[in-house]
Length: 329
Ligand code: FAD
Ligand code: EPU
Image (cartoon, rainbow, N blue to C red; front, side):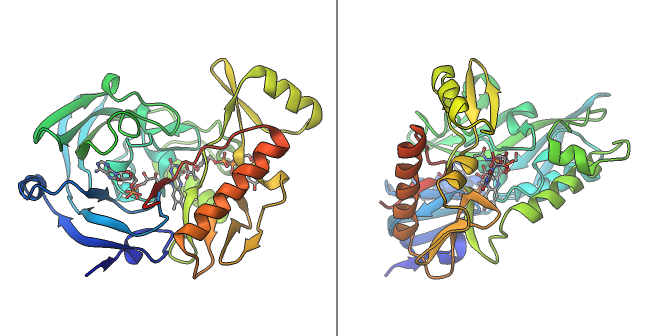
């Protein structure tokens, strides 16, 4: 007997797993480990996964809830959120308490526990900037471990948990340092354009971000997707200069010694924006977002992603790396 995963991930494609186990507490994780099963996958909101096929093992569905203030001084609060909390609810909790730090990341789908996985970010802020520490269960050793910022190897859409630590830890709590007197980050042109009045509260920033995101990105409840399918590629100066002479308008951003390009623009230039291919395609307002037009299979979306990678490599000599976690290939 297989169980359908369709309601549990935002691409909404049909995929099955052997069974789903709901995780409501840390004890539930330890209880599961005593069964000795090796084949399992942690799922939060399923908003950054693509099931290219069925998953043969057990899916552990994270439903651990709770937000707790663990320390406070005149500057701010150290807040601990259970990893199954909905990220956006946590952001709205923080802005309702007049706390700064998370407001630019309003409306990012998914759970708190997945936020450190790829160091989520939007509109000029990544979760690393408010991150203090996290608690995780080491699934190999059956022990609890605390990770501080220095242990997490956070990078652009990257962390230790997406690399060497992949699959080894169940993140159970994430602790953020939120500030009472924060500074609004409104460098992003879209955000700045909406905030004409003086910004005095984090809620104002969150509301601006929500309004931009609602216009730009498809709502997974209406059209299946997992946000940006690829990372924005970081290229060396030599390749960038070559591309710049050919494509004067190429969007680019500094990334240390290198240059970050806009994957959405590259895909758009290859003629894919809003393109419908069978049951899949790219979103009409954002070529970086692959969508399920209703009956796509995970494999169909995966093949289409490969086609896009090939086209961008051929036209620009740039390799696109998938941001979405591919499961069941
Ligand atoms: P899932 O998809 O359930 O899991 C993602 C990965 O993390 C999987 O490998 C899973 O096994 C692992 N994982 C999940 N929870 C845990 C845990 N507790 N412990 C250990 N491993 C775990 N991302 C951004 O960074 N910025 C954006 O602006 C953004 N916009 C988006 C917009 C849309 C419309 C959508 C659909 C997605 C967007 N995303 C964005 C991607 C996604 O929202 C984030 O990656 C989010 O953090 C995923 O959370 P999740 O709970 O759904 O993770
Ligand atoms: N662009 C096009 N055509 C397109 C799409 C984009 O020309 O079809 C151009 C835009 O005009 C702009 C540039 O590409 O000049 C960048 O586009 P945008 O501002 O929409 O942002 P992005 O780089 O595509 C990134 C993140 C998003 C995040 C936003 C806002 C990545 C991979 N994506 O998108 O994150 O919400 O910035 O900060 O870094 C996600 O990770 O899932 C995600 C949605």
